[in-house]
Amino acid sequence: MFNKETWYSIKKWKTYGQHFNGNGATGGKVALASRVSTGFKIGGYGLGTYNAWSINNQYNNGELNMSGMIMEQSSNLYATFGGTYGVAWGIGWEGGRAITKTTWYQQWKNDYWYNFREEHFGY
Image (cartoon, rainbow, N blue to C red; front, side):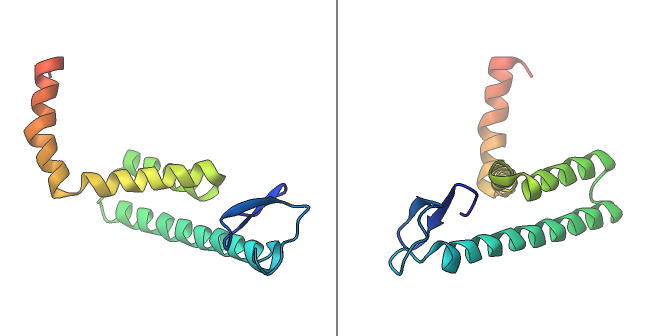
């Protein structure tokens, strides 16, 4: 939302160059865009810290093995500090987790996917 070259106006849903400071109609780059961007960054670090603690807790309680914990912590690290691509990774990772826990997905996997895989790939 706010970087060296551009800033994003929440009011206008438009990106502007840093040469334009904004006005009442755009919300202004410092008055709104910079503050919102900083809030997202701090919130993201907070969520990443909480998630790291939660992953360690799961590992300590025996809910995750060592390789699972390393995989989860690596994903969390990239999602927290990976910038735009890290955010996209984190959304995809957690979105996939949410989908695979649903009843309809489990039914689809058991009723369709395993049969398809056996028929076409032999396993």
